[in-house]
Every structure is written in C-alpha cells, then in structure tokens.
Length: 146
Ligand SMILES: [Zn+2]
Image (cartoon, rainbow, N blue to C red):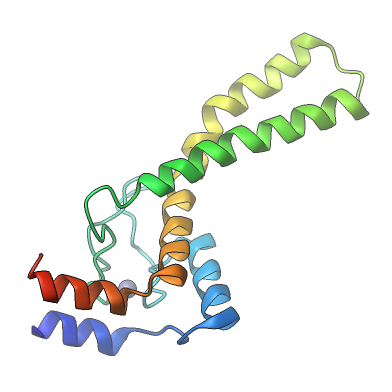
C-alpha cells in the first residue's frame, strides 16, 4: 500500500454499510460533495469533476467507462421529469400548445445540463453502495492497475 492509499483510507468517513451508508452517500451526492470523505470542491466548475478529491485524494473515475451509468441516469431523469410534468400539465391545466412548447422545449435543453453533476455524484453513490471501494482497491492492487 502506498502512502496515498493509506492517507485516503484514514480520511474515509463512511458508515460500513446499510441505510446509514446509503443516506450519507445520498446527502453527499445531492450537495455535490466527495462520496468518500464529504469534502466540498470536487468540481472544477459546475459541470467538470476533478480527477481526485482535493481532501482525501479519492479517484472519482474508478475505471474506464465508469461514468457511463451516470450518463444513463441523466438520460432517465432528463426524460422522465419533463414527461411527468407534461402529463400533469395535460391533465390539470388547459394550456395551449404554444405555452407547453415555451415551457418544455427550454426544459428539455437545460435539464440535462442542470442535472449533469448530480447524475455523476448519484452514480458514485450507487456504485459505492453496491461495490464498496475497498473491493475495487483490492482488485486494483491485485491487478497492479493505476
Ligand atoms: Zn474526499
């Protein structure tokens, strides 16, 4: 184990499992914090995630194609939220097509951008609940992958 991994492990501030682990990770995802230690500032700007956490050095992109699931979440949320709101608007309002277009076309353009950082942090939450990084670290050390 190199010093970075030792330091990273000592800064790990995650419940071992269960609901408390999930709720901690979910709170961190919704506030755009490091899933591992809860530090702020893991994004360079609104959209761009840093490679590692500035506090605990946790590597966010755990393997090639890691954030593909995050893109999937983005597609699902960006499609479902407008669809549900559109159905709601059809059923409970008498707005004409022009009004609906003025609301939902900008929403379809802006929502994926607004949700993008959250889909990444939510993907890291799902990943760390299903596959705690202790397992990945062992796998990386075993295969000597950097
Ligand atoms: Zn961190």
